[in-house]
Length: 201
Image (cartoon, rainbow, N blue to C red; front, side):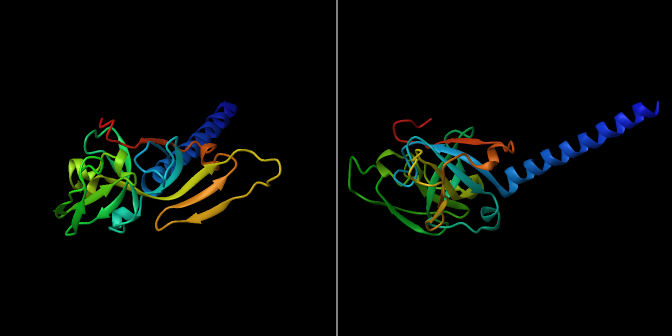
């Protein structure tokens, strides 16, 4: 009988440890930071067409600490099931001058960003579906700010493994020769497809 009690106690202890670990991962992934796979043409040349592994932090936007120039993860206004990556161009109260479609016309339009909204655009204006098409985006759709990008380069026997930190205004890149440790920890990955003019779904 004592043996069964010992086994049950050990099982309960292990279950509690697993539950705490999963809870920690959940809090980290949703409220601190999370790895995200982003691909698509709208953020060229900042982000690659074939995909980049990014680290998104979920703290700054909760304290209104994002602004023009920041690259953010936003829930798509056109399809709430999708997330897109765009750059903030203007905040509420800003006057924005933009080209609706640079491939068709060079006539600029002007708009005032309303309260509680932001204006987002892709770096590749010729292949991005953004605020120029669906207007200002509610600030509440922002899910995080990008601050690390991971590159996996081709193996070179003459080059040692190293990690290089490259800073942008609010986007940095870490070059690794392997996937980040976060994968082995089981952190939930998020896949993001950048919206473009050719695919507005």
